[in-house]
Length: 195
Image (tube, rainbow, N blue to C red; front, side, top):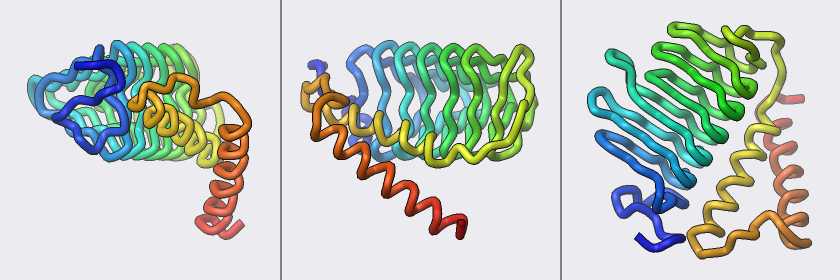
């Protein structure tokens, strides 16, 4: 497959890098992206990747023996993350090198810090910041705008990569679009929270 194209099995994805490997029963939502070196395997159960989610370079996604893997809408699964039979709620950011194990549930709008290790069966409430090995909730925060902005950045980048443009985050047009998106997200957040 030529660089910039995407996997024909997933026509609604914004970008699936030619080096991404996808095996088994996997659904990829509209606008989602899989970056270089991503591996997704579902020999049993299944993997569902939500709309506008991004799986960044060298992410590994696998199912558990008795648990599927679910990744919500507008999630950023950053470089070298391992997701194994877990559930990630909408609007989450999973930090570089984190590992989330079988049966764990990360509530919507949460951030899992880089290199955190989330043990089997851990349930994280929505809007949490999670850190450490083993991972623990260290505080609650409203991460919706920051996490949505990160997902937007990757969706913009995915569309550019699909065209062969590797500089989507550069220049005055990008800066204007980023400022406009922040304003849009702030307005949407006020509407959804009434704040």
